[in-house]
Image (cartoon, rainbow, N blue to C red; front, side, top):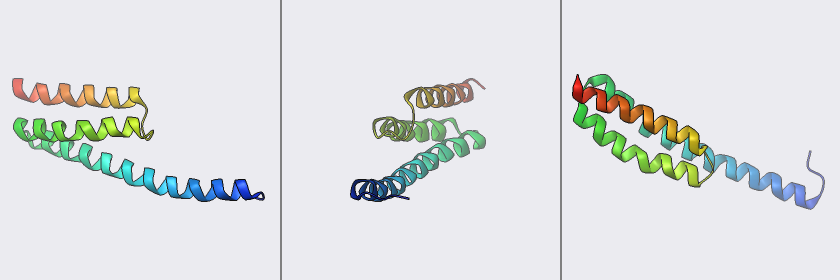
Length: 89
C-alpha cells in the first residue's frame, strides 16, 4: 500500500497509464485480427491492405512502450510472409 505522497501519486499515475496502455494494446490486436481474418478468407488484396494499415499501429506500439521492438518485427515479418504466400498460392 502506498504511504508517502510520492508513492500515492505514482500509484494514481500507474492506474491511468495502465488504462491507456490497455486501450493501445486492444487497438493493435484489433488491427492484427483484421489481417488474420483477411488471410483466413484467402483474399490477398484485402490482406495486403489490412497489413498496410496495421503496420503503423504496430510501430506506434513500439514508440509508446507497449510492445518490444523485436516482438513487432517478428509479427510484421510473419504476417507479411503469409500475405506474400497468398499471392503465390
